[in-house]
Length: 290
Image 1: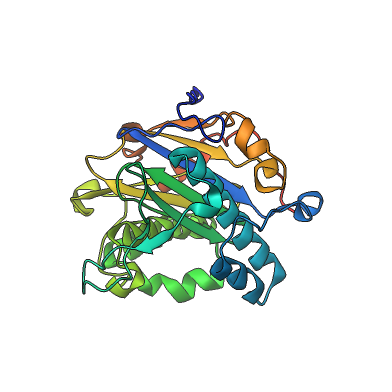
Image 2: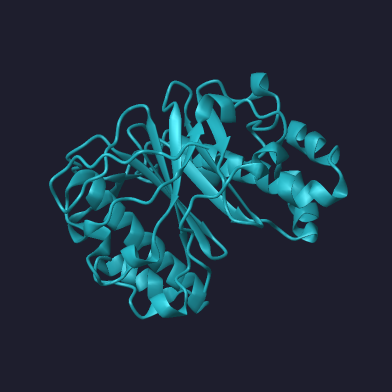
């Protein structure tokens, strides 16, 4: 599979990352390994993010949150030219009630840029595009969790899940659930809309007309997905954030972005089975979990 080319464009920090209307950039982050934990730079986080990091009951969850948000800020810096600590976030109005709990957004961004973030069980997924989007990543659930949660799916999705072999139920449920969460995030309404309302299964004609949802290559025992407007980006790159980009060195400023797996979204959107996407290659340079 052809790797995605990188073209530096902005003068600060060095070099910049481009963003075009046809482009979707997806970045995977893993919880830093033991050698990288002491180097994790928390200075780029704001006060609320540092408090949230310290507030997790499990230290590993706080570490992943900190790594994901440090990566988010540094990538936004590369896309916009702002310093990571100068990036400010806001919330768009909710499409349902108009209150300020819709999609997260950049406040005063100098370029048209949207982002989405998800993290689960040691892995985070960051998405960037010139149009609204939503991403989700999940560790595949245990079989008993699938049995307990399948009733939250759309009836058509439940029927499709019931038709797969028992050995594939965890993977197919993860495929369905990440597509569902990514779509709800893209809408800006979250779980308030209800998970059984929209069909995101195999039949393309039954899916929401205004959005398209794609599965994303991810690590073993994980599922991931991204939702974008139907007339949105036509190509995507999936990369892993290098562990060195999260530390106190200047690697994140000076190094070119790593090569990524290039996805033709038109082809990816025509998958006839959720398991057909499990054969996609992973991006190079994936850091080991700690």
